[in-house]
Length: 408
Length: 219
Ligand SMILES: Nc1ncnc2c1ncn2[C@@H]1O[C@H](COP(=O)(O)OP(=O)(O)OP(=O)(O)O)[C@@H](O)[C@H]1O
Ligand SMILES: [Mg+2]
Image 1 (cartoon, chains in turn blue, orange):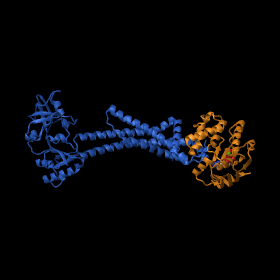
Image 2 (tube, rainbow over the protein chains, first blue to last red; image 1 turned 180 degrees about the vertical axis):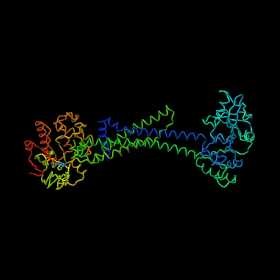
Image 3 (tube, rainbow over the protein chains, first blue to last red; image 1 turned 45 degrees about the horizontal axis):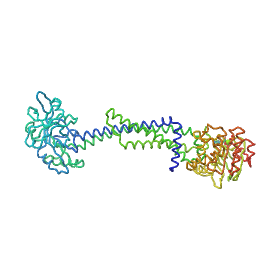
Image 4 (tube, rainbow over the protein chains, first blue to last red; image 1 turned 90 degrees about the horizontal axis):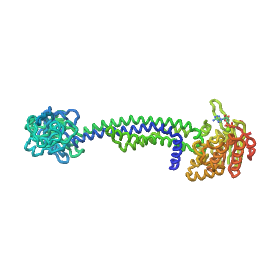
């Protein structure tokens, strides 16, 4: 089909649509609703997916955590590990620290215990975490006010603490400067050096961070670590790094295989993949449901086009008598179906984009319109028009000119 | 121009076979004016449809301008209709949504002529049939005679060599019908071959030659 005849088909179809605009609008309605729901549901799915993935990134980037004990579920960050006997040794830690810089960026050991906090006459219960300054890097958890304790605090087993935002709220009146104040952790006096930023995560916001050495000496009396948090140098090295760590620690712990290991390595990649997989499946499911309505819209187009072909039988006969070839008739009706579907699709895109925006703006539900979903909706509208307009157009082109002319 | 040899057209109606045409042979020269007469059901329209390449014969040969057209593909037939034939129908068959100008342009659309050229040709033709002041009118805004004039202008759009008119005055009163006949005759004088089907003897008489059909045969 040449450019000119395509243009002529579009003009003819445009006229025909303009001749019965209400019918055309109702015909396009199905596709419109289908496209609008595909666009907005995919946007909501994507929004949810990104929100969850973003939440995971907040935990720290390229994060691997070696935990004491046998594997428990797939959680990357386990909140309640205080009751597990620490099995990770100083040698384990030094071995991991000894890995080359192109694999490991930061390493922070950590052990935790439940703690009773007291400041003046206020009490609260929280988790005390013994660790090193690298913890701030690995877990992407930084002081909002004051500072974190330093390596020299670790070396000298100082009684200093950085407190979570929740702890601050529980113990201090609003506006009070806690830095330099003394609080008691399980009865032991600590000087507060900083308040950590708020993470929206109870485990971190309700924690007290102290030097690991102080923790070992004064809280647990155990020289092992409950966990070792590691920031890998890049996402690419996370899996090899996990394998290397497992291999080294198995040898150090004199164990045959991971099945019998007294430690395990949680990998952020796995969690991310799981979460994104679930969210992706969810998005796909929403999109498929919406796509069904698109198909239903297509069937609507086919229905109306068949009626239209019957109604215009005589017109088709006249056109054929005047020299319209089969392909001219096909392109006329196909163009009409595609224009109707595309019109519905474009309005549907506008509604979908507007709807997602409104949901995010007014209901604070995350949504993300991806260009690809708009392009796909556009393309699918055309395909729906072609597919469901195809049969009516073919029927029209197969009419016998004489019978069509005689049609009342 | 038109040479038919032993042309038959049969329709199957269940077990029965209707012989709409039963061995028609005829010759119509270029520039000729021929009337076809005959009682209802004698096969006049069937013959016109075959001459006009809307239909193909069941048997026999038909040459239009020395080209055998009896076995052409539907699309080739459409091209022949477009370029060589002009139809004038009893019921006009104008497209109701298009105005006079656009109706006249229609054959030129299928001939692949550009829009500007089409417009100019269509205006010229409407002028020729005396409707230069009605170009923007839709068929339902025109009288029967005016509609038939638009239809004639449309039939002339691609400058066909043959004009086929199947009872062109059948839906018109005598005076208007006579005016339409004047117009058709004028076109024949300018060289277009004219084949006219009519039931009215005084119109048929105007032709150079009258072919009478009876039960699908030339009587
Ligand atoms: N599609 C068809 N199926 C079956 N029979 C048909 C068909 N078309 C025409 N016929 C038959 O062929 C015969 C000739 O029909 P045709 O229309 O050519 O007659 P006509 O001479 O034009 O009549 P009129 O003067 O009434 O227009 C008729 O008997 C008609 O019933
Ligand atoms: Mg007839």
